[in-house]
Image 1 (tube, rainbow, N blue to C red):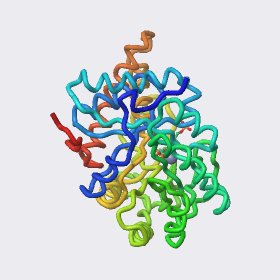
Image 2 (image 1 turned 135 degrees about the vertical axis):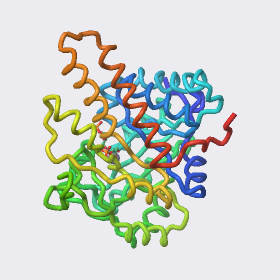
Image 3 (image 1 turned 180 degrees about the vertical axis):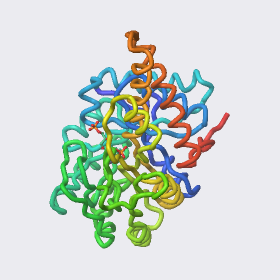
Image 4 (image 1 turned 90 degrees about the vertical axis):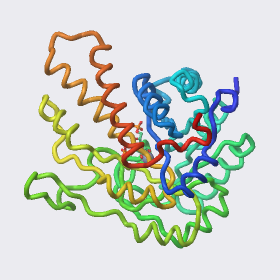
Length: 337
Ligand code: G3H
Ligand code: 13P
Ligand code: ZN
């Protein structure tokens, strides 16, 4: 049975993006697949009074079950209130939707925002598909994110061998003809824990840690000149914290030369028209690092609460850090009381 996100207590992204652009900060879009991640996201965002986007990929939706997800999102709103956040601003967003049918199904099932990722399609096909999703979603006041330019690596089931930066000369035409509410761009980020090959990086002589090349801020500037004040989205924005990589590698894991986007670059992006920053891999790393540590220290442990609990605690720490120290979205709810 169809349900409106408004009946679940969720909000779309329109107002939160407007305020984020004007205020020079970005809204966190955290992917989740399970209860512990959701608990951690809501705990951190409620404590810090941050608007937040709960982001669900096609794979996550299949993993968690769409009906369960709808009630989890509704539960998240109630949980935020229980934590003292009387007026939470929580969006439920489909990440990397790859078809009209999937986007429609999410709109019908209580999502307040959807992404249609036609970035791997020829330009005109991307426009036609995105426009179709916008026309459907806007009837229900659901906001839509489109994408122009291709990120390197794996975009859910959209695979791209190489990244193709967004072409600033296309953004006006694309946004006008599709009617999208926000635009994901490609300026050098990519998905996962291996965002750059070691040969693209320099190595810090003291620590041996890889230092990646900077993002293409010149392209972001050109896009912002073309579309002043338009909401821009940055995917692939995990920083791949070295402490988590070290925890994983020192407990039998194998993540050689994992490298992410340095936080100072994300701070810079958050101050611009980039108003949504997508983070998934860092949460996966925190979860895995904490679970591995428990197993390394207590090999006899078999109560999931004893290893998922510490994983949840580490994720809370991570999300609080992102909100406060990187994105700057703390204390940005419209109603703070
Ligand atoms: O952009 C991709 C997200 O990190 C989701 O990944 O498709 O493995 O859930 P997933
Ligand atoms: P990361 O893999 O860098 O966390 O990116 C997540 C993302 O872009 C989800 O859409
Ligand atoms: Zn993404």
